Image (tube, rainbow, N blue to C red):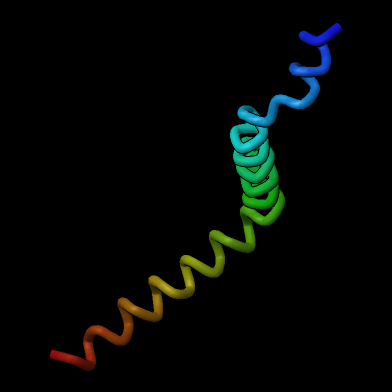
Length: 56
């Protein structure tokens, strides 16, 4: 019975589980908004490319 109580109170693996859940949520958001993220990055890189010619 003591082993069961110790197992329930054990908190060493909680940090790992939290990190995994955060990563899963972030990956899910990236997959959901993939097209929007690609468009934003493309616009930013295009803007940088167009503006570098003015510094020459």
